[in-house]
Length: 305
Ligand SMILES: Cc1cc2nc3c(=O)[nH]c(=O)nc-3n(C[C@H](O)[C@H](O)[C@H](O)COP(=O)(O)OP(=O)(O)OC[C@H]3O[C@@H](n4cnc5c(N)ncnc54)[C@H](O)[C@@H]3O)c2cc1C
Image: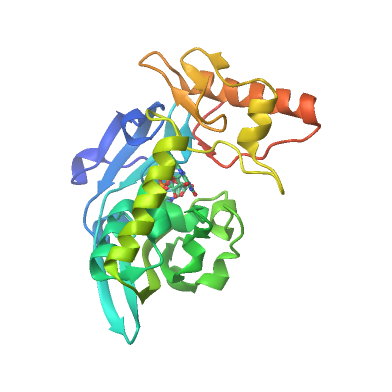
C-alpha cells in the first residue's frame, strides 16, 4: 500500500471529519477526502484508479443518508459525490432520463414533475443521491428505484466502465448485488430511468401526499432513516415500539418517539459508538421479546475495533 501525495493532486484533502457528510452527523476522519463536483467524473475516476493501483481502500459517500461512519473514521480514500446533472430524451409517451449519480433524489423528483414525467414521486422526501439509491434500491410509498431504472454505468477496478441493465443488480427489498460487495472497488457514474408522461398537476399532488405523510410520521433532525429492514409481514418500527423501546437512549443517540425505527442524534456530544450501541441494544431486546433478529438496513463504514 502506497500513500497518495495530497499536495500533488488538486482538491485532495487529508484527515477531514466525515460527520458533516453524513445525515446522522457522526463519523471520524477520512485519511484522504475528495469531493466530486464534475458530472463526467474524469478526475474522480483518475483518482480512484490511482488509489486502487496503490492498494488503498476506497469508499464512496453520496448523501451519507444510510451509512454510519465509525468515530475512528475511514482508512484510504473517501469520495463525496456532489456532481449533479440531469438530461432527458423523448421516447413517445415516455422519456429516458439520464442522471449523474451525485444528483439528489429530491432534485430528480422535482425535475421529473416539471417535465411531466411520472415514476419518481416516491423520492420527493427521500434524502441521498441517485448513486446511493441505485446501490440500496431505495424506495418508498410502494415504489422503488428498481421500478423505473433501465440500468447504470458503473466504473469497476477490474473491468473498467460497464453498462449494467437493471436485472444485473439482482434487486430485492433494500438489497442489490452492489450493496453486497465488500471490496467497494466500483463507482456508479450514471443511472438511466424510463418514465411515463403524466399531468404535472397530478404528479405534484402525489408528491404533496408523500411529503405530508412523511411530515406526520417521521422525526426531524439528524438520523439515518430506517435502521432495520422490515421483517416479512411486519414492521421493524412496530416491533421496537411493542418492545417498549421508544425513547431508549445511549448518550445522545435515541430511539425516536415519533417513529421507533428512526434513531436520532440529539446533539454535539453524540458518538457513532453510542449510536451503534443503541442499535445493538434494540436488536437484542427485540430478539428477546419476539425471538426475531432484525436485519440492518443501514451500513456501518470504517474501523469499529
Ligand atoms: C430522514 C431519512 C429518511 C429516509 N427515508 C428512506 C426511505 O423512505 N426509503 C429508503 O429506501 N431509504 C430512506 N432513507 C435512507 C437513504 O435515504 C437511502 O438509503 C438513500 O438511497 C441513500 O443514498 P445516499 O446517497 O445517502 O447513500 P450513502 O448513504 O452515501 O451510501 C449508501 C451506500 O451506497 C454506496 N454509494 C453511494 N453512492 C455511490 C456511488 N456513486 N458509487 C458507488 N457506491 C455508492 C455507499 O458506499 C454505501 O455503500 C432515509 C434516510 C433518512 C436520513
